[in-house]
Image 1 (cartoon, one colour):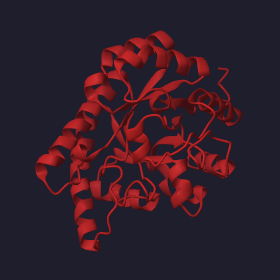
Image 2: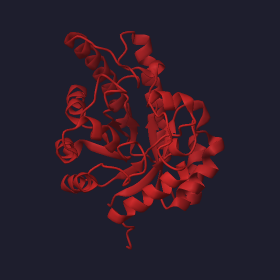
Image 3: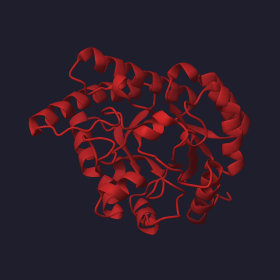
Length: 288
């Protein structure tokens, strides 16, 4: 198995829907990617049948990524809120199984944008609630061949899990080998001392990789230490999806959530084209 390169639908349309699928799949394939990562902002807008039809038509593989707001908080003190978060995760797992995604990815432990100064005991309690919920999600995914890829976010987007070390602690609390990590160069560039050391620490827990530049722009256009990062992926034997992720600054809710106040590329098409061009230098297409 070799690494396969993908593009997030956050670059193309938000919230992504069945109505966007034909154009999004066509554009992703035309750019030269092999995977389209579909972000499930509104589950009612996306169906497995439409994703599968377009995947078959274009030859793209499909990955599934979640979007986690306050109404999907599996760490909330209120059990009813946690159950709503779990219901959303189960839906994403079922969709992933139906379209052949090996995982559901994202910062599924808490709402994106939550930032509080908690006492250690309060933080530990929240982590326990998150771990208990995600253990149930991992067990649900096990019967469907779908793993969890849990993403640490930078300190401005969450106060709970910022580093690989913290994410590994959460995985230990979950206690299920089907719970692994999504590592993202944008967040790692802010939170980790050295990207290579963090990747090696994550080791065989890495289930998925997202890439963006230090400003969330086109990979290769900024100061992320790419050789160090990719060498470390080789060291841990990672073979899986590597997905370019950025966000449309015109979508106000997303832009506010990720503090994206200005365009990070000439256009989203330019970002997608530049991203695949950069990645192909390291990961040329297989000729076999």
